[in-house]
Length: 173
Image (cartoon, rainbow, N blue to C red; front, side, top):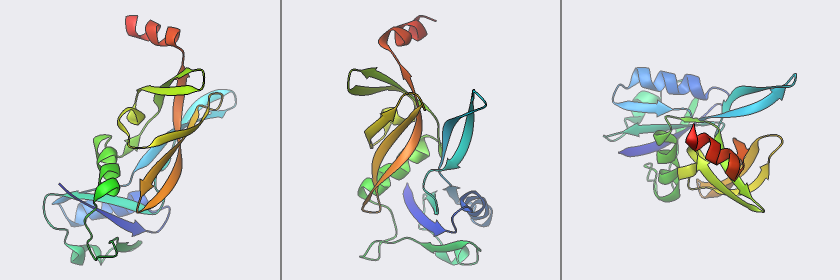
């Protein structure tokens, strides 16, 4: 599968992905989103936010027809490497495939904390190519470093902390 990334107006990622999917039926455009948990009035609520503001991934079996995309408003350009190659490679490709495997929606993961060690036991972080750099158990957030476009980026994702005992109880239910 060939994978590309387009740069678009921040805040319009979902609309741009929707337009691409309408204009070119041979591609699947995904605006990657993260589902985070936030506490409002004492209750945990799920909220969806852009995973990579200003970016949309395009997946296709064929070469990307950039002519069709040039007509879309809010889409600035198809990203390319210094060599002129537009197809994603290396860590960028792996990151895009991770987003693809989770259908563009990065939900909460479950992490097991053992002292200072953090181990992912369920959810999107289980197969990610990122590195956990910080964990806030009380706010149910985890900071993860990913490399994308040659730059190390830190994103905040939701993570529910569980104990070994809590994990054992889930497995028996």
